[in-house]
Length: 182
Image 1 (cartoon, rainbow, N blue to C red):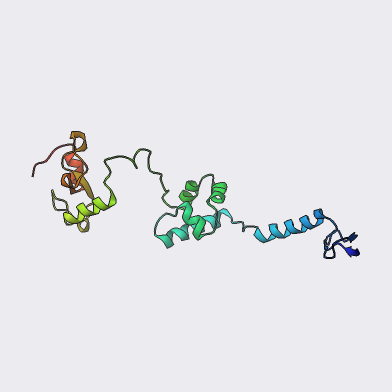
Image 2 (cartoon, helix red, strand yellow):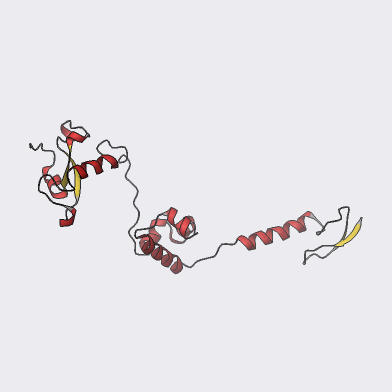
């Protein structure tokens, strides 16, 4: 059994240990040293509100869209919860950075049977040459294209290839629930 001096600078007391490799006089001294090292090594950088807003703006420019919480967590290595702590909510921080907020999908929309799947939507658009079948408008002319039910859902129309056509926003909204014959 040897005599040792505790390696903790604040303690530095002499002690005897039955273990020849002892560095600290007690478990409490060794825990204080370990906790101090861990806290010092993993302490996150604190950002000011202005720095956070700048980071969000630069990330939006890099992505070409409003960043999501996942983008912030992975790309900036900054927790979205920390941003919410600074500004109240994540979307409030996005708005303060001068960006359009990410809005959640309203409940019931995702499972609405009127929605046309992405593969079927692309098939209908390519089948119709990416042009409105009613007026011939195309995205290059400034038209927004929709997928239209020829026989509306309200009249028993199904979401299947034979009942779907490409229509521009103007024609689709003007048609409403009417059935237009070819």
